Image 1 (cartoon, rainbow, N blue to C red):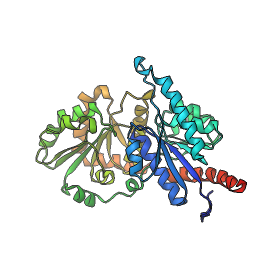
Image 2 (image 1 turned 135 degrees about the vertical axis):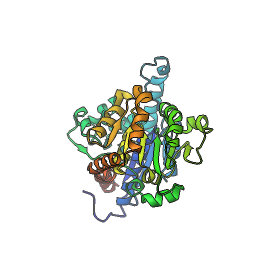
Image 3 (image 1 turned 120 degrees about the vertical axis):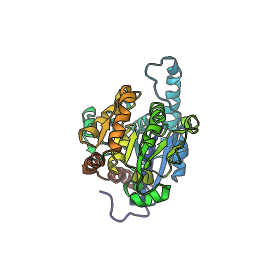
Image 4 (image 1 turned 60 degrees about the horizontal axis):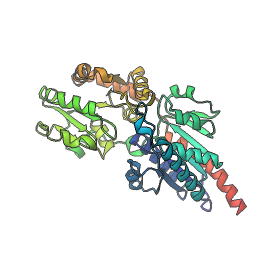
Length: 383
């Protein structure tokens, strides 16, 4: 347990490794924020790649980030992996150099390609490590790293079977404080310029966007909106697809095509239905905001973990799952059914709200600080 009143003379150093997608980066930022709430003068910095979203998102959140060369192994694409061993070796050298130079008292891995070499380097150099697994199906890298991690935090109980670690804690996924404390529906709609009586569909394809969801929404949006003048669609395409769909008829402002959504708390609060991929962070935010959801899991991820995530929400009655191969036939009927049936939406929302949500970021921050302070006190004694 961390001290109730921090010692201003003790400055623990924390390093977080996370990258690639918002599903890894934003939970790591939430953990970093929670650490500073508990110990305001801790040193908290990040490791990430210069070619993915963390390079912009982390500094924007107020944290320094160190470059690590890292790429993922492309399953089924042999030619794409020819440079993988060289980049992996470079990433290990980067990571070993960073851990020696920054000398963290604890290293937290929140996933993404960069997390592997940084945590492995930390373990080789004897630093305490904490692992945060966001998905119901744990990846190979996290399974290997977990063997020497001090603590493994999981978001879904189904992930427990993948780890042999003695200290496994089920806490859910860390989410931003702003998501946990959203504005009221009235305030959110006023902020976004949406009428109070509108029925709003929020389309989310993950931080990069989803071509399949985008193409399907493009095919059905006009039919959905013409059936009822009170319907609105707020559609996050992802940066890669924004230009492709920006020229669609906006139906008098009721179809809003955006590459990226900055004010996520307001969009969740304004929504009556979400149509989304089922990355771990998205699923956690849907539960935390009690947003009725139709989930279309991406099959193009390791071990099909998005399907496992989606089924976990479906089993508690908080979401409807439409497999990607069936999206052209089943998505429109599922969406219309929810839009036309407020009782069904209320049932999904109630089921989501009933899922116990612990403050994952604070739980992880507390454990990480316990480990960091133990080492930091040792450093202070040896000075």
